[in-house]
Structures are given as C-alpha cells and as structure tokens.
Length: 121
Ligand SMILES: Nc1ccn([C@H]2C[C@H](O)[C@@H](COP(=O)(O)OP(=O)(O)OP(=O)(O)O)O2)c(=O)n1
Image (cartoon, rainbow, N blue to C red):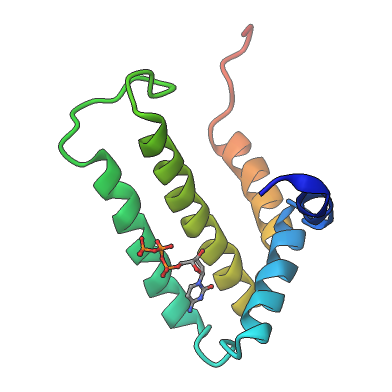
C-alpha cells in the first residue's frame, strides 16, 4: 500500500452509499459474479458476516466503549467484518431496488417522530 498510485486509488474511491454501491457492482461484473448476487444469497452472505462479527465479541464479557484493551490486530479484524456486513447490506439493497440513501433518511425522520427527545434538553 502507499505510494502515489494508492493515494489516487483512494481519492477515486467514493465512500458514500451510492459510491460503494457502484464499486460493488463493478467488482461483481468484473468477476462474472452478478449471477450469484441474488437477494437471498446476499442476505445469507450478510448474516454469515454478522456471525463472523459476533465471533469477535464471543466470550469476552462486556466490552468498554472504544475497546481500550483490545489488540490492534483484533480491532483491524473488527473493522474488516463490519465492512463485510456493510458491503453486503449495500449490495443487497441495490439488488432489491432499494435506494438506501433515501430509505435511511426517511427512517431517521420516522424514528425521531416515534421517539421525540424530551423537552428542555
Ligand atoms: N460472492 C462474493 C464473495 C465475496 N464478496 C465480497 C464481499 C465481502 O466484502 C467479502 C467477503 O469475502 P469472504 O467470503 O472471503 O469473507 P471474509 O473476507 O470474511 O473471509 P473469511 O471468511 O475467510 O474470514 O468479499 C462478494 O461481494 N461476493
């Protein structure tokens, strides 16, 4: 990693839901994996990754915010599994024809109506 090429690559990588969605589309197309990226397969793949994410926390007991006592390698692993869940979620949404930007924006508004903040805070 590093070097000029890597930096340019990162700049091109648009880390927005839409940008990631396009990246994943390209990734699947280049490998001829579109045939496998059906909604059900993607859902199962995402749940599998949630399992891998859970394994990281398994048997550790309660974990303090910021994971202060964790090895860097465990934190890196955690970042990878969180990313896998996010990437499959984005791809699943795309393959279901759901605009996640729009859906998540609407849902945040809906949550605020359902759970209003106490007055005077
Ligand atoms: N058919 C596939 C297979 C993989 N991926 C992408 C999405 C995930 O980000 C990542 C998942 O890859 P792996 O199945 O190899 O899972 P891990 O990276 O978790 O590896 P491991 O299970 O060996 O820890 O690759 C994908 O888009 N479509």
